[in-house]
Length: 151
Image (cartoon, rainbow, N blue to C red; front, side):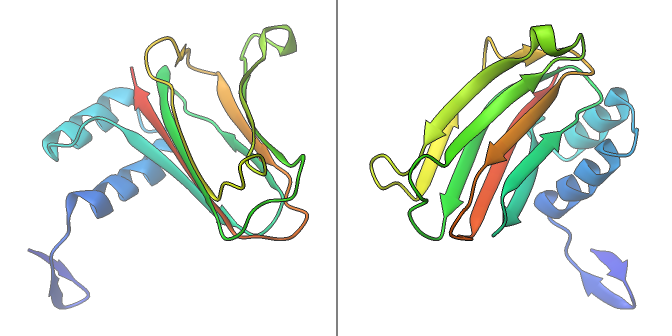
């Protein structure tokens, strides 16, 4: 139990990890993150969440080496044709080293939910970023959960 504004509140591991994610985005060292996450008994995974009804042009900027583990996408309706979801490695060494990691048109197959697993072989150095893009001509609600593992 933790005192929160004068009332007793149970803080679960999920809410504590979300707080750690905010710290990660503000220059906390990798050692601090690992120590804090391990104290929680968590699996050492970090989730980045985005929910919007706008066009997605999102960059995830870990400040440490990491592995891309997975991405989950859910849409409120079938997206328009040719509105392709892409994940691109934005390499710290410049555009000559960028690479498209995923290119998926969810309209094909009329999908409103998508899960992709990456894992081993998708390791990146500190300074590499992930650019995630998705057109959204019909202003459908799109939720994305990207999971990475600090290395």
